[in-house]
Length: 343
Image 1 (cartoon, rainbow, N blue to C red):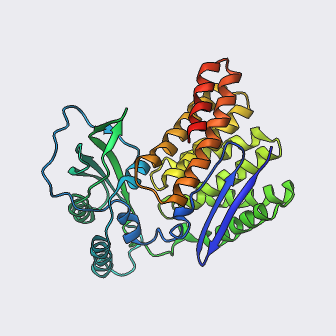
Image 2: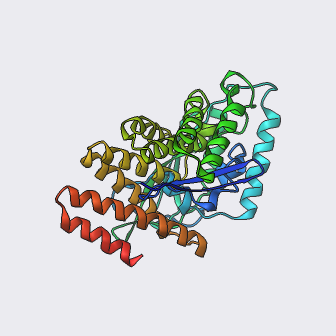
Protein backbone atom coordinates (compact mmCIF):
# COMPACT_ATOMS: atom_id res chain seq x y z
CA UNK A 1 0.00 0.00 0.00
CA UNK A 2 1.31 3.43 -0.88
CA UNK A 3 1.22 6.37 1.46
CA UNK A 4 1.85 9.89 0.26
CA UNK A 5 1.70 13.03 2.30
CA UNK A 6 1.46 16.69 1.56
CA UNK A 7 2.48 18.74 4.57
CA UNK A 8 3.20 22.37 5.09
CA UNK A 9 4.18 24.63 7.94
CA UNK A 10 3.66 28.38 7.72
CA UNK A 11 4.66 30.09 10.91
CA UNK A 12 2.55 28.43 13.58
CA UNK A 13 0.21 26.96 10.97
CA UNK A 14 0.52 23.21 10.74
CA UNK A 15 -1.53 21.19 8.33
CA UNK A 16 -0.96 17.87 6.66
CA UNK A 17 -2.68 15.66 4.15
CA UNK A 18 -2.05 12.05 5.07
CA UNK A 19 -3.29 10.01 2.15
CA UNK A 20 -3.40 6.35 1.23
CA UNK A 21 -5.13 5.24 -1.95
CA UNK A 22 -8.56 5.94 -0.42
CA UNK A 23 -7.41 9.53 0.29
CA UNK A 24 -7.41 10.93 3.81
CA UNK A 25 -7.09 14.56 2.92
CA UNK A 26 -7.03 17.92 4.67
CA UNK A 27 -7.64 20.70 2.14
CA UNK A 28 -5.11 23.41 1.47
CA UNK A 29 -7.87 25.96 1.76
CA UNK A 30 -7.56 25.79 5.56
CA UNK A 31 -3.79 25.36 5.89
CA UNK A 32 -3.07 28.99 6.72
CA UNK A 33 -6.00 29.11 9.14
CA UNK A 34 -5.34 25.75 10.79
CA UNK A 35 -3.66 27.04 13.94
CA UNK A 36 -5.73 30.22 14.26
CA UNK A 37 -8.80 28.65 15.80
CA UNK A 38 -7.98 30.36 19.10
CA UNK A 39 -9.37 33.50 17.45
CA UNK A 40 -13.07 34.18 17.79
CA UNK A 41 -13.20 35.95 14.42
CA UNK A 42 -12.04 32.78 12.65
CA UNK A 43 -14.37 30.38 14.44
CA UNK A 44 -17.39 32.58 14.02
CA UNK A 45 -16.54 34.12 10.65
CA UNK A 46 -16.86 30.71 9.07
CA UNK A 47 -20.58 31.00 9.73
CA UNK A 48 -21.44 34.69 9.60
CA UNK A 49 -23.59 36.97 7.46
CA UNK A 50 -26.82 38.96 7.66
CA UNK A 51 -30.26 37.39 7.44
CA UNK A 52 -32.75 40.22 7.51
CA UNK A 53 -34.84 39.21 4.53
CA UNK A 54 -38.28 37.68 5.00
CA UNK A 55 -38.18 33.97 5.75
CA UNK A 56 -39.23 31.44 3.13
CA UNK A 57 -41.65 28.84 4.58
CA UNK A 58 -40.30 25.31 4.93
CA UNK A 59 -43.37 23.21 4.31
CA UNK A 60 -41.98 20.49 6.56
CA UNK A 61 -39.47 19.79 9.32
CA UNK A 62 -35.91 21.04 8.67
CA UNK A 63 -33.29 18.59 7.44
CA UNK A 64 -30.51 17.91 9.94
CA UNK A 65 -27.25 19.27 8.49
CA UNK A 66 -23.76 18.30 9.59
CA UNK A 67 -22.10 21.27 11.28
CA UNK A 68 -19.04 21.04 9.03
CA UNK A 69 -21.23 21.29 5.93
CA UNK A 70 -23.03 24.29 7.40
CA UNK A 71 -19.69 26.07 7.79
CA UNK A 72 -18.81 25.92 4.11
CA UNK A 73 -22.30 27.13 3.15
CA UNK A 74 -21.85 30.32 5.16
CA UNK A 75 -21.66 33.70 3.48
CA UNK A 76 -18.87 35.84 4.91
CA UNK A 77 -18.01 39.51 4.55
CA UNK A 78 -15.23 41.67 5.96
CA UNK A 79 -17.48 44.09 7.86
CA UNK A 80 -19.08 41.32 9.88
CA UNK A 81 -15.68 39.81 10.64
CA UNK A 82 -14.65 43.20 12.04
CA UNK A 83 -17.80 43.32 14.17
CA UNK A 84 -17.07 39.87 15.60
CA UNK A 85 -13.46 40.74 16.29
CA UNK A 86 -14.59 43.77 18.29
CA UNK A 87 -17.02 41.54 20.17
CA UNK A 88 -14.18 39.18 21.07
CA UNK A 89 -12.02 42.00 22.42
CA UNK A 90 -14.95 43.41 24.39
CA UNK A 91 -15.61 40.05 25.99
CA UNK A 92 -11.98 39.72 26.95
CA UNK A 93 -12.07 43.09 28.67
CA UNK A 94 -15.33 42.37 30.46
CA UNK A 95 -14.52 38.92 31.82
CA UNK A 96 -12.62 38.92 35.08
CA UNK A 97 -8.85 38.50 34.94
CA UNK A 98 -7.51 34.97 35.16
CA UNK A 99 -10.75 33.24 34.20
CA UNK A 100 -9.80 29.79 32.91
CA UNK A 101 -13.00 27.73 33.09
CA UNK A 102 -15.13 29.34 30.38
CA UNK A 103 -16.97 26.58 28.52
CA UNK A 104 -17.56 26.62 24.76
CA UNK A 105 -20.95 27.86 23.61
CA UNK A 106 -23.21 25.50 21.72
CA UNK A 107 -26.16 26.76 19.69
CA UNK A 108 -28.75 25.26 17.36
CA UNK A 109 -29.50 27.22 14.19
CA UNK A 110 -32.38 26.82 11.74
CA UNK A 111 -32.41 28.29 8.23
CA UNK A 112 -35.11 28.55 5.58
CA UNK A 113 -35.23 27.56 1.91
CA UNK A 114 -33.29 30.69 0.95
CA UNK A 115 -30.56 30.11 3.51
CA UNK A 116 -31.81 32.82 5.89
CA UNK A 117 -31.56 32.15 9.62
CA UNK A 118 -34.98 31.85 11.23
CA UNK A 119 -34.02 30.71 14.74
CA UNK A 120 -30.96 30.39 16.95
CA UNK A 121 -31.37 28.54 20.26
CA UNK A 122 -28.76 28.27 23.01
CA UNK A 123 -27.94 24.69 23.99
CA UNK A 124 -25.03 25.06 26.42
CA UNK A 125 -22.53 27.60 27.70
CA UNK A 126 -22.66 30.68 29.93
CA UNK A 127 -25.99 32.48 29.59
CA UNK A 128 -24.37 35.90 29.04
CA UNK A 129 -22.12 34.61 26.26
CA UNK A 130 -24.90 32.54 24.68
CA UNK A 131 -27.15 35.60 24.49
CA UNK A 132 -24.48 37.58 22.64
CA UNK A 133 -23.82 34.80 20.18
CA UNK A 134 -27.53 34.17 19.57
CA UNK A 135 -27.82 37.80 18.51
CA UNK A 136 -24.84 37.57 16.17
CA UNK A 137 -25.75 34.22 14.68
CA UNK A 138 -29.28 35.46 14.11
CA UNK A 139 -27.81 37.50 11.24
CA UNK A 140 -26.30 34.48 9.52
CA UNK A 141 -27.15 33.58 5.93
CA UNK A 142 -26.07 30.55 3.95
CA UNK A 143 -25.91 29.20 0.45
CA UNK A 144 -29.25 27.31 0.44
CA UNK A 145 -29.06 23.67 1.46
CA UNK A 146 -30.32 21.02 -0.93
CA UNK A 147 -31.56 17.46 -0.78
CA UNK A 148 -31.98 15.45 -3.99
CA UNK A 149 -31.46 18.65 -5.96
CA UNK A 150 -34.19 20.63 -4.18
CA UNK A 151 -33.80 23.46 -1.62
CA UNK A 152 -34.58 22.42 1.95
CA UNK A 153 -34.73 24.11 5.31
CA UNK A 154 -31.80 23.08 7.47
CA UNK A 155 -31.00 22.75 11.13
CA UNK A 156 -27.54 22.24 12.62
CA UNK A 157 -25.36 22.78 15.66
CA UNK A 158 -22.99 25.72 16.02
CA UNK A 159 -19.91 25.37 18.23
CA UNK A 160 -18.12 28.51 19.43
CA UNK A 161 -14.94 28.68 21.49
CA UNK A 162 -15.40 31.96 23.43
CA UNK A 163 -11.74 32.94 23.00
CA UNK A 164 -11.47 33.64 26.70
CA UNK A 165 -9.56 30.75 28.20
CA UNK A 166 -5.82 31.50 28.52
CA UNK A 167 -3.47 28.75 27.38
CA UNK A 168 -2.46 27.96 30.91
CA UNK A 169 -3.68 25.44 33.41
CA UNK A 170 -3.28 21.68 33.58
CA UNK A 171 -5.19 20.91 30.37
CA UNK A 172 -2.60 22.84 28.34
CA UNK A 173 0.55 21.45 29.94
CA UNK A 174 1.30 19.02 27.09
CA UNK A 175 0.55 21.37 24.19
CA UNK A 176 4.17 22.12 23.28
CA UNK A 177 5.15 18.47 23.54
CA UNK A 178 2.19 17.46 21.40
CA UNK A 179 2.91 19.97 18.65
CA UNK A 180 6.58 19.04 18.62
CA UNK A 181 5.73 15.37 18.23
CA UNK A 182 3.11 16.08 15.58
CA UNK A 183 5.59 18.16 13.62
CA UNK A 184 8.11 15.32 13.79
CA UNK A 185 5.44 12.91 12.57
CA UNK A 186 4.56 15.11 9.59
CA UNK A 187 8.20 15.85 8.75
CA UNK A 188 9.07 12.15 8.74
CA UNK A 189 6.04 11.25 6.63
CA UNK A 190 6.96 13.94 4.13
CA UNK A 191 10.55 12.72 3.95
CA UNK A 192 9.57 9.13 3.24
CA UNK A 193 10.95 7.78 6.50
CA UNK A 194 10.92 4.05 7.17
CA UNK A 195 7.78 2.68 8.74
CA UNK A 196 9.13 1.99 12.21
CA UNK A 197 10.47 5.52 12.70
CA UNK A 198 7.35 7.13 11.25
CA UNK A 199 4.95 5.01 13.27
CA UNK A 200 6.85 5.68 16.49
CA UNK A 201 6.74 9.45 15.98
CA UNK A 202 3.07 9.52 15.00
CA UNK A 203 2.00 7.21 17.82
CA UNK A 204 3.76 9.39 20.36
CA UNK A 205 1.92 12.44 19.03
CA UNK A 206 -1.44 10.64 19.06
CA UNK A 207 -0.91 9.22 22.54
CA UNK A 208 -0.04 12.68 23.88
CA UNK A 209 -3.16 14.27 22.40
CA UNK A 210 -5.78 12.75 24.70
CA UNK A 211 -5.79 15.22 27.66
CA UNK A 212 -5.78 18.34 25.47
CA UNK A 213 -9.00 20.39 25.14
CA UNK A 214 -10.67 19.35 21.90
CA UNK A 215 -12.24 22.77 21.33
CA UNK A 216 -8.71 24.18 20.94
CA UNK A 217 -6.76 21.29 19.44
CA UNK A 218 -9.40 19.11 17.77
CA UNK A 219 -8.08 19.40 14.22
CA UNK A 220 -4.50 18.66 15.24
CA UNK A 221 -5.66 15.76 17.41
CA UNK A 222 -7.69 14.27 14.58
CA UNK A 223 -4.74 14.75 12.25
CA UNK A 224 -2.44 12.86 14.62
CA UNK A 225 -4.91 9.96 14.83
CA UNK A 226 -5.39 9.86 11.04
CA UNK A 227 -1.66 9.89 10.34
CA UNK A 228 -0.95 7.19 12.92
CA UNK A 229 -3.69 4.93 11.56
CA UNK A 230 -2.51 5.48 7.99
CA UNK A 231 1.12 4.74 8.85
CA UNK A 232 0.14 1.55 10.65
CA UNK A 233 -1.99 0.37 7.72
CA UNK A 234 0.88 1.08 5.37
CA UNK A 235 2.89 -1.32 7.55
CA UNK A 236 0.08 -3.91 7.27
CA UNK A 237 -0.90 -3.47 10.93
CA UNK A 238 -4.59 -2.70 10.38
CA UNK A 239 -5.75 -4.12 13.74
CA UNK A 240 -3.44 -1.70 15.54
CA UNK A 241 -4.56 1.10 13.23
CA UNK A 242 -8.28 0.71 13.90
CA UNK A 243 -8.31 2.19 17.45
CA UNK A 244 -6.54 5.33 16.17
CA UNK A 245 -9.03 5.57 13.32
CA UNK A 246 -11.84 5.28 15.88
CA UNK A 247 -10.32 8.15 17.85
CA UNK A 248 -10.11 10.24 14.68
CA UNK A 249 -13.85 9.84 14.08
CA UNK A 250 -14.70 10.40 17.73
CA UNK A 251 -12.70 13.65 17.75
CA UNK A 252 -14.13 14.89 14.45
CA UNK A 253 -17.68 14.19 15.65
CA UNK A 254 -17.29 16.54 18.62
CA UNK A 255 -18.00 19.52 16.38
CA UNK A 256 -14.66 21.35 16.12
CA UNK A 257 -13.44 20.03 12.78
CA UNK A 258 -13.86 21.10 9.16
CA UNK A 259 -15.69 19.16 6.48
CA UNK A 260 -12.67 17.63 4.75
CA UNK A 261 -10.96 16.79 8.03
CA UNK A 262 -14.09 14.96 9.12
CA UNK A 263 -14.22 13.18 5.76
CA UNK A 264 -10.61 12.10 6.27
CA UNK A 265 -11.47 10.65 9.68
CA UNK A 266 -14.36 8.59 8.31
CA UNK A 267 -12.31 7.63 5.26
CA UNK A 268 -9.38 6.27 7.24
CA UNK A 269 -11.71 4.34 9.55
CA UNK A 270 -13.44 2.94 6.48
CA UNK A 271 -10.11 1.69 5.20
CA UNK A 272 -9.13 0.23 8.56
CA UNK A 273 -12.46 -1.56 8.84
CA UNK A 274 -12.06 -3.00 5.35
CA UNK A 275 -8.55 -4.25 6.12
CA UNK A 276 -9.79 -5.93 9.30
CA UNK A 277 -12.65 -7.68 7.50
CA UNK A 278 -15.56 -5.40 8.40
CA UNK A 279 -16.75 -4.64 4.88
CA UNK A 280 -20.20 -3.49 6.00
CA UNK A 281 -18.71 -1.00 8.44
CA UNK A 282 -16.27 0.13 5.77
CA UNK A 283 -19.13 0.71 3.33
CA UNK A 284 -20.95 2.88 5.88
CA UNK A 285 -17.87 4.96 6.73
CA UNK A 286 -16.88 5.52 3.12
CA UNK A 287 -20.42 6.57 2.24
CA UNK A 288 -20.29 9.10 5.06
CA UNK A 289 -16.90 10.41 3.93
CA UNK A 290 -18.12 10.74 0.34
CA UNK A 291 -21.26 12.63 1.41
CA UNK A 292 -19.06 15.12 3.24
CA UNK A 293 -16.78 15.55 0.23
CA UNK A 294 -19.73 15.84 -2.17
CA UNK A 295 -21.02 18.73 -0.06
CA UNK A 296 -18.01 20.81 -1.07
CA UNK A 297 -19.37 20.84 -4.63
CA UNK A 298 -22.59 22.57 -3.49
CA UNK A 299 -20.88 25.91 -2.82
CA UNK A 300 -18.71 28.27 -4.88
CA UNK A 301 -15.14 27.05 -5.04
CA UNK A 302 -11.83 28.43 -6.22
CA UNK A 303 -10.31 26.35 -9.05
CA UNK A 304 -7.51 24.98 -6.85
CA UNK A 305 -10.01 24.04 -4.13
CA UNK A 306 -12.25 22.25 -6.59
CA UNK A 307 -9.28 20.37 -8.04
CA UNK A 308 -8.16 19.29 -4.58
CA UNK A 309 -11.60 18.08 -3.48
CA UNK A 310 -12.13 16.35 -6.81
CA UNK A 311 -8.92 14.36 -6.34
CA UNK A 312 -9.93 13.39 -2.80
CA UNK A 313 -13.40 12.28 -3.83
CA UNK A 314 -12.16 10.30 -6.83
CA UNK A 315 -9.78 8.39 -4.61
CA UNK A 316 -12.50 7.60 -2.07
CA UNK A 317 -14.96 6.49 -4.75
CA UNK A 318 -12.38 4.20 -6.32
CA UNK A 319 -11.55 2.47 -3.05
CA UNK A 320 -15.22 2.22 -2.10
CA UNK A 321 -15.96 0.58 -5.44
CA UNK A 322 -13.41 -2.12 -4.61
CA UNK A 323 -15.15 -2.76 -1.28
CA UNK A 324 -18.58 -3.02 -2.92
CA UNK A 325 -17.19 -5.43 -5.51
CA UNK A 326 -15.81 -7.62 -2.72
CA UNK A 327 -19.28 -7.53 -1.14
CA UNK A 328 -20.85 -8.79 -4.36
CA UNK A 329 -22.51 -5.45 -5.14
CA UNK A 330 -21.07 -5.00 -8.60
CA UNK A 331 -23.80 -2.66 -9.95
CA UNK A 332 -23.28 -0.31 -6.99
CA UNK A 333 -19.53 -0.49 -7.47
CA UNK A 334 -19.84 0.41 -11.15
CA UNK A 335 -22.09 3.34 -10.23
CA UNK A 336 -19.34 4.74 -8.00
CA UNK A 337 -16.74 4.24 -10.72
CA UNK A 338 -18.99 6.07 -13.12
CA UNK A 339 -19.36 8.96 -10.67
CA UNK A 340 -15.58 9.12 -10.33
CA UNK A 341 -15.13 9.20 -14.11
CA UNK A 342 -17.50 12.16 -14.37
CA UNK A 343 -15.60 14.28 -11.85
